[in-house]
Amino acid sequence: MNRSMAILLAAALPALAAAADPVGVAAKGGFPEYLFIEKVTRSEAEATAQKLAKAVMAGRMIIFAHGAKITDASLGDKGFGGAFFEEQWRRSTDDLTIDATPAQKRILDKLFWAGRQVMDNNQDRINTPGVAWKHFLPAKWEREMGQVLTARTGIIVKQPGRTYRSPVNVPDDLERATLEHFIQAGHAENKPRSVATSMGKQAVVRYMEPIRLMVPCLPCHGNPKGTPDMLGFQKDGLEAGDVIGLMSVTLAVSD
Ligand code: HEC
Image (cartoon, rainbow, N blue to C red; front, top):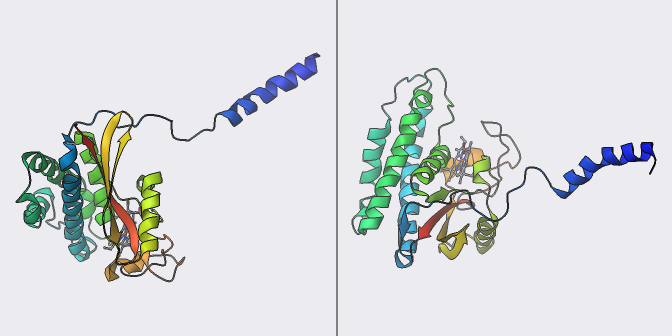
């Protein structure tokens, strides 16, 4: 090999290496949450996940009901802090806590705690005067609440979207297939899906149920498809009753 050929080859090598190892892809094998603090027995897992999903939905509804107040530019302090929110949330979930097992009660308590933290974290945002749109809506609360809950417990609460706005809501393979199932099955299919699998080294139960749109969601997720909503995202072109995403809960099992 002459000298110029050797120089050419040396220049080409990094490019070849880059082709073999793509950058910015998921590492294979494990799972980032490798220490799952909270675990439930397999027999309790689906019912626990369902309680979590229903409780999160109830929390979303409380934020949703305060939407007009939150987006009122003429108001400063909204009086919508963590303690107030938690009290309302607990009251709206009496039916979920009344028959909860000790493990479920403990986990629900940590969920309420996580939701409250997120409300407290967002007070400066919610109370900013003179601005109508402050980027505080049910999906943002759930995204941040899920991250706080995972940090404390290892339980994963996600809302994968069919056309997600936040990259945190990217569906994984199972969630994508489940979204497709609910989209194809039509409005009447609401039977939750529960799958026993593993994440990294941990055996888990993954529970998913559809999030369906209501009329007040349509200014952003409705029609005309592709036209900008008030935040600049293109509208999804969906109608009331259509699936927009999933309540996706992953629980570690102890047996
Ligand atoms: C003001 C516009 C607006 C309205 C109204 C609205 N959304 Fe969204 N939605 C968003 C934005 C923005 C996000 C991303 C939130 C984030 O994670 O920061 C989002 C995210 C979501 C997600 C998570 C998947 C994703 O796209 O990232 C779901 C599920 C969702 N919305 C459902 C609903 C439902 C159900 C309603 C009605 C109850 C609703 N939205 C009303 C703007 C809106």
